[in-house]
Image 1 (tube, rainbow, N blue to C red):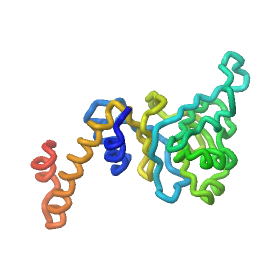
Image 2 (tube, rainbow, N blue to C red):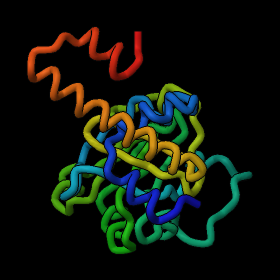
Image 3 (cartoon, helix red, strand yellow):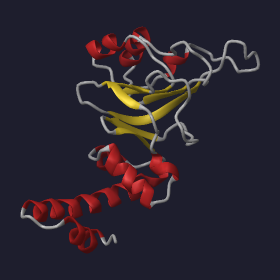
Image 4 (cartoon, rainbow, N blue to C red):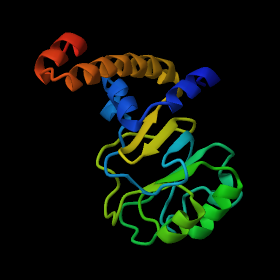
Length: 204
């Protein structure tokens, strides 16, 4: 589990910053959930928290284990529910009633690899939801989300970070932020991009 200090540090950075750091750490796909976008941003405009994972199954799958309560009741204070829906299920797996319950339980938002409904209701209650619009397939890569992974969703996309990498990600994000601030300063003075990237980022 990541320390409270590391989590606070991670909270300062965008999904793009975190994804760049995860690429450097060679984490699959940079932790990026391809195709999932923010559709009902909350007051903060982002989602941040540890994942509570739900794998949906078709009703015809009688071999699936039965939950002790409705899956939405498994939301936790400060968490983000991540739902993976079967690719061939056309109905929505999340709606306004579920967000109302999740918000009462203290959930920070929901990320859905599948379909949802009642967008206006989510926006009205300022409950952040990210999902694949008009999804006929789940997101394009095979990145697996584990319970407790840290999910960050904003207008740029959705990225997931394993707790074991949070401190390294924060350090890389901070390093990159300092370099980029120097780049902004020089670019505003008219400096050319190519030489700056080579000298400050050590990129060819």
